[in-house]
Structures are given as structure tokens and as C-alpha cells.
Length: 115
Length: 115
Image 1 (cartoon, rainbow over the protein chains, first blue to last red):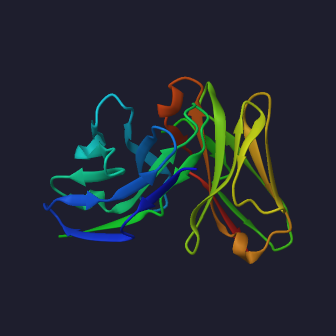
Image 2: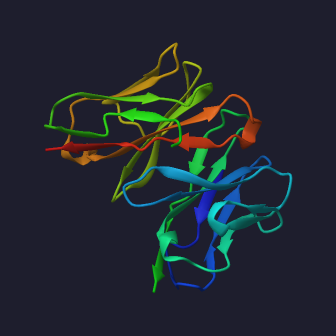
């Protein structure tokens, strides 16, 4: 069975400083991993996905994530936070190795950005 | 716009009533997922359908049921509603192509308020 754990429920940064949102996974299979962002009262939007083609994945809005098999991690980073980055972020795993695999969500990390 | 359409956007109903939430997936997507998001429970997986068949079941109450129709749209039926069922209900769809790395696209959600 697959599980996804986001290590921080809240992260607070100042505008212009780096962002690190941590995610660990466990999976019997080579995982499919995604990061989604949810702004208040909005649906979830895909930030980036790991497709096994490259361990460093670049996403939208300057975010990137690195897949580290040895650490079973898929942490999300951004060099410089923007006020508009304030939102809730979800790390998601897809199990089963198929296109219809079950999605497993982490608990979510709320990112606060201070001026 | 994710291409996933959920109706209605808002729904207010009384306890004990029954409601139906509708989801139209992206064109060509065979998988439909339903999630419930509330402040106290976070994002909870309810159920998943693939091409008309139930694929996975999460924390879905017996008072709730869902189905996916031949045209691939899905409906989530909630009955004997309780105050605690008030939440944002999300539908997501995922493609038949793209394999295990096919991401899910989320609708904007239906906000259900039970009074």
C-alpha cells in the first residue's frame, strides 16, 4: 500500500526567501508523485509531476521538486517566495502503476508568506 | 480551467434531505474520483470509478453512493444529510493515456451546506 506523508502542517516564510515543503512517500512500486496547490475556495491545481524521466522536476510558478529514491522523498522548493504563493499544498502519490491508480493525498501543508 | 465541470457550485439544504452532485470529467478521461474536504477532516477520498466500474473505495459513508454513467459523467448521491456533511466536495478526472503519470484534474468543487 502506498502512503504519503507531508512533514509540516504549516510553513511560514518571508517574501523573497526560499520555500521548502517536505514530502515522504512509501510505495511498493516505483511511484507516481505529484504536487498540487489549492488557493482558498478554489480547486486543486497541478504544480508538477514526477514521471521517472528526470529526478529534478520543474513545475509552474518557479516551483521544482527532487525525487530522491534513497530518502523516499519528493520535497517541493522555490528559491524565492511570492505573496501569491500563500496557499495549501498537497503531495499526492498514485499507486497501482496504471493510469487508473488510486490517488493518495498527504495531509497538506499551509504556506504562509509574510511581507 | 481544468476541464472538469461540477454542478451545482453551491448547495444549501436541510438535515435529512437528499442531494445529488454532478461531475463531468475532461473529454476522454475514464477515471473519476470524488473527495470530501472539510476543515476538521481535511481532504478525504470517497470513491473512484473507471469506465463505469467502481475501482476504489475510501471513507465513504453508507448514506452516500455514487455511479459513473456510460457517457462517463458521475453523480454523488448524499442522503439523510447531517450537519457534519457540510463540506466542499471535489471531483477529479484522469486520462486513459499517460499511464501511471497521468495527473488528475480537479473541478472547482460543490460547496454543500446542511442547515
